Length: 314
Image (cartoon, rainbow, N blue to C red; front, side, top):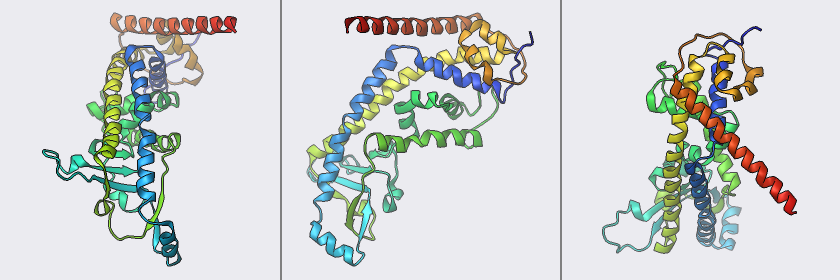
């Protein structure tokens, strides 16, 4: 029977993506803790929305807005700068007492699109989105591992020099960043308010909030940071496993050699065409892959048993 040969441009990338998808399904401690941290982070959002809505909606009486609207003196705004009113707090910088809320920002707020690392809520950085939606991205064929690999190493899986400005990596990042809108949609964060028209920026029109309200924003940032800490642990485990899969894929001349070690790869045979060059696979990588598949199989078996038990109970 003819062998299904592998190449660098089409067939191996298919296997790399499939490896990511399968590794993401393998149960591990940090995957569970990451999901828990994500839920705790998402639970802070309703309080944020309530504070913003109460603060902005009550700034200008509706009757005044109606009059201004007649003269085209209102605008829709979705970015806001908030500052703690407690000015006597010692040893706390102004930056620590301020927060930028960016909800699908338009207009002036675009100048202050700092990302979560600079005390911003609402808008997320690319790394934030990966931590929150990694499994969904991989399931949709987004090569997140390659993006991070190139970002960290300035080369691709095969050692070819590449940076984040390369078109392929830019395209991956653009796909990742589309999840910003998903984050807004999932959490009903497409928030916009009618306000008096102004030539000043968000920063110049800072709204005052209490220390207690600022603490709610700080909790959002703290919980998001916790997601990153858990996600990093989870990703490090997945990255080590991926190295084994990547070595197998690089070292195999044809799909049959891959399937011999990693039987699940048979599931993507229909997608694969091309030629390749054979290298050598280490016994360590083979062992890692076999153990990883065994853990997924065990998890699936447990899930089936639990489902059947629940059905009997019904």
